[in-house]
Image 1: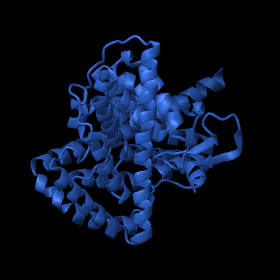
Image 2 (image 1 turned 120 degrees about the vertical axis):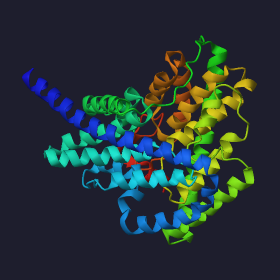
Image 3 (image 1 turned 90 degrees about the vertical axis):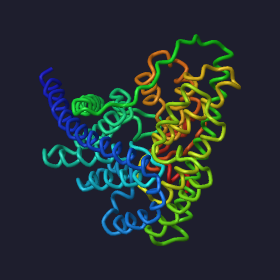
Image 4 (image 1 turned 60 degrees about the horizontal axis):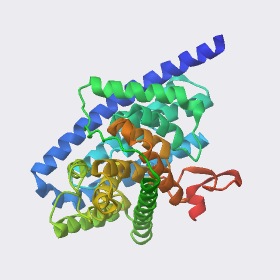
Length: 415
C-alpha cells in the first residue's frame, strides 16, 4: 500500500509539472495563432507571400530543424525506442513554424505543435529530474496527452489519446495516471491564462435502431475512404516532392505556389488556415458537397510540401463538412452527423477511435453516444494499415487474431 501511494504521488507530481508547462506553452501558442489568423483574414494579400515564406522556413528547417521535420513520428518513435532525446528547442521551433504557416495561409492544424511541444517539455523535465527510463516513457505519454488536451480543451480525450496513439489497437494503461493528470492540469492552465475554446452546439438525443445503425455503418465506410484519400495524397505529395526536388526550401516554395494558385482558383479564403468558421457553420447549415474535397487538397499540399502544422483541425473540417453535406440525403440530423463525422474522420486517420469518441462527448455532449462510437470504430477498421502517423506500432492486423512476433511500424507494412 505504501509503495502504491508513493507511486501515485510521484505520478501526480510529475504529471502536474508536465501539465503546467504544456498548458502555459499551449496558451501562448493559441494566443499567437489567433493573432496570426486575425491578421491574415484582415490582410488577405499576405497569402501571396506564402511561397516566399516557404523558402525562408525551408532554409531554416534544412539547417537547424531536423528534429522538427519528423513531426509527431519523432515523438512516437521516442516513446517506443527511448534512444533519442527530444530537444527542448523543438518547442519554440514547432510553435513559431506553425504560427507562420497559418499567418501566410497554409492549411494546417494545431495538434502537431501541441503534441511535439508537450513531448519536448516532458522529456526535458524527465532529464532534469533524472527519472528511470520507464518513468520517462510515461512522462512522454503525459506530454502527448497534455498537449492534445490543452490545445483542444478536451482533457479526458487528451489523456486517452496519449495512451492510444502510440500503438494501433492497444491502450497503454501503465501511463494512465500521469497522462490524465497532465491533460487535466494542462487544460486548467490554459483556461486560467484566459484562453477560451470554440463552443460547439450540444446535439439532441436520438435513439439508435437497426436502420440508423446501417446508416452510421455506411457513413463510417465513406469516412474511411476519404481518410485514406487524405493519407495517401499527403504522403504521396511528400514522397514525390522529396524524390524530385532535393531542397526543402524549393519544395516549400512550390507547395506555397500551389496553395496560392488553388486559393485564387476557388475564389474564397474558407480553406486557408484552420477553417474554423466553416467547421462551425457545418452544424447549422448544409455544407457544399465539394467543401471536404477542397480542404483535402489544400491541406495535403501544405503539409506534403513541408509546412509545419497538424492534421487534426483540417480533418475536423473535412469530417464536419462531409457529414453536413450528406446528412440530408441520408435523412440524418444535421448537427449530430456533422459532429460524429468530425470526430470519426480524425479517428480513422490516426487510429484513435476511443479518444475521438470521448472527444465528441466532451465537445458535443453525451447524446453523441453511441452514434459516434459506431462510426469511429467502422472508420478505424476500414482504413487498414494506414495512418497520418506512420511510426505507429501494430501488434496485429486489424480484425486478425494473428500477432506479429515483434511490433511493426505502419511504415514498414506499407514499404
